[in-house]
Image 1 (spheres, one colour):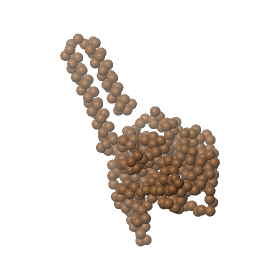
Image 2: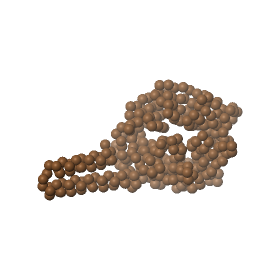
Image 3: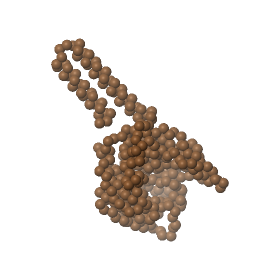
Image 4: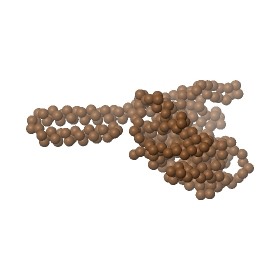
Length: 372
């Protein structure tokens, strides 16, 4: 039972108690004293409720609220290798890409009982690629390599893709918002610092950069590293910093990014960057990671956190990963839950819909049922 349920439970019990006392007691003074006591108790509960909510959501003391069974009834599918990544999710299928076979897509049914492999065919065969990735969105799929740069688009009915965009803007991250609109992360030619942008492909190809969205703290590269995801339900994009407690939400109506905060207290990236003799930069010490993998669904942002909160069990940290959940439009922390390890392997990537939570753990694809 959560805080809200406790509050209503206490209010209802108090009202019933007052009615019983009014019925049974004849001495008005006793009734008045009892009513005053109950009223004071209810007032204290209400004050504690709203104070707790304010602390959890706004003042950021880094205390998590764990739900008892948000995911349950794990089922596993052995994939044989650990080179898969999640390319997309539809109501009945989860699509897996493979880093070692970039044009191979594995479609797994939602019950994990059927697995079908599809070989993507491109409308050209002579081009060399460096880092092909596939993203599936509804019936469409996109094959991209930001180092060339190029994007192909196709349909899952035949897995044939034609050239959609080429040689317009280089990117290191790309996520589709719609069938012809993308959010991306690129680097400025002048100094190599990260910048977010939007790409629109119609009869012509246009893009714009959001110059002030990412905030430089140290070098503008490592300190602004993060995860870019899009919410297929709301058609919004979310960029979550890896080394600080902040995320950015793309608002389509205003064509801007708004800021949100995670519940941990790392406001400044705790990293050390060194410059080599040839001018390139690298991490000078093991970085202090805050947020790693993320996913957005129906207005909620799910973040795999790398930090323990107050009064949390270190033994649980060795058994599970912590997923924090936010309402990203309200900038509010909602709750957290554990995604358990499998044979000492931690969950490395995850997606979800209204019914199921899917994750990659070692060589396994796991499916949990979502609780109410």
